[in-house]
Amino acid sequence: MIYAKRKSLYNLHISSKTCIFAGKMQPQNTLYRIGAYLRHHLTAWNTGGEGIHSPYLFYLVRMLMYDTNAYYCFAPIEKRRQVMLHTETEIETTDYGTGATGKGTIYRRIIADIARTSLESPRVGQLFFKWIAHLGHEAQRPLEIVELGTSLGITTAYLAAPDSRNRITTFEGSPAVADIARQNWNKLNLHNIDIVVGNIDDTLYNYAREEIDIAYIDANHTTEATLRYFEYLARKANTKSVFIIDDIHHSPQMSKAWQQICHHSLVTSTMDIWNAGIVFFNPHFLHQNYTLRL
Image 1 (cartoon, one colour):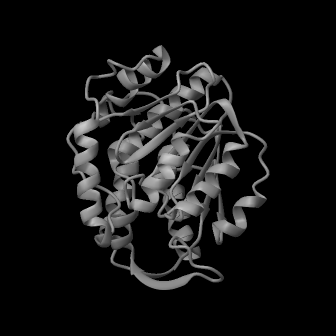
Image 2: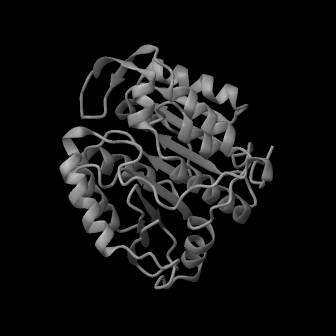
């Protein structure tokens, strides 16, 4: 089933003004993120695509990133988000995201708290959906998509929903969190997702697919780990691949990782949209790094 169709029944309006700290937020990085946001706001373009030299990237910005149309899978996915935001059940989580080694750090967390702090915002998740639908239409074949950091599976749902023929492989460190994600996908009737559970530092390198069309990296938020994941996956990129690096302004370490990715030898263009960085490998693009305000 292909979900990339508009349906007026769910004509949701996604505001172009979102909270600057919507989605994931860690208190210890609040001051850093305020400063990073101000720098981003002062340097970002908000011109609907003007100034972007590549016609293809201009089209993506103008037609996709500023498209406020809703698609009929958005409402069910957001309904699952609301269920997560109101679920007070406590589960055991395993955190490898701060560079912990071995078995990681075990915490007990309430599902609603995970939803408040770990899920991508609706607007950005829906942008990913539209982008994948467009890339699938261009490719005229199923896409290979990999996600590092499943969390509760809401962003994964946006990655999987454009076309049931696409194959999504997602990696999650915590077994209990992975179980909740599976429940959400079953509720949404999404069956094109494979989840790999365990420390991504151990499990990722068994990922055997030779080529990746889309990669979404939202795992260990350290410079070294982010660059290590990017290097491994970039070897599997093709010229039409798009990589999304989440939380690029989350901390000084993530900002450092993003700057190094922007200057990577395989990367031809990048877009900083505040919540995430988008990476292109097309050799026909001018090598430019764009900062955009959504």
